[in-house]
Image (cartoon, rainbow, N blue to C red):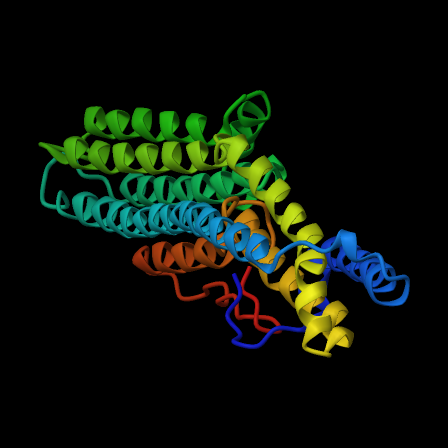
Length: 312
């Protein structure tokens, strides 16, 4: 996620350099043809550019609003995951400790149960992050799980789903053994349902793109606008005796519309491990710190800080 207010022009240029190169070459060719060679027939009325530019602006606004809605929904889903993570860690600790006075309570299994489920939840959070970023590596979950469970996950087609299933089974095992009692399982299952729901939202955003016709026609219209710009500006600028502005103005218009188009393009995919993404790594670290602190741990991993204005 980008946190800084100012951008490196070199990084911005990497997003739109093909459009700028085409705009430079094409506007220079139009300038040579119209001004130096006198091919006035290639000129178009300025109104053509105004009408087309207005229509393109409306199209880009719709596309970018849709893209930002997807980015916002992704960030909201991870906000809900963070809240549910705090809740499930708190419930595991408070429910287990609340039964200390009962005959079935045994301190050692109860403490092991709390740690096991909190750490498996952390494994689920990291597994979801890796799945969304197409970086799944089960070995990264080793600090949170037993070796036997790690072997089972290597054969799983969906690691997050398998971890949620195991969480549910262990909750009912704890009910049978007396570690959990009463209606504890209902509230914990409710939090697992919240996590599963938010996982489904993230997977939908990852797997179902903005309808491709919007992507295709947006790119097509931006390229058309770039090609029309010098043809529509040439006659007006020459009549005003500022024909030398044809190339820089074409580059300016091309940059503005291209960067708006590319901004929407990158925002519509918030889980691609780019600098514009929702900061999944930082959120996972916050969740881990809070959950382990709930267990009473003090040796917590440090927060992830922004690097050069970017938070991963």
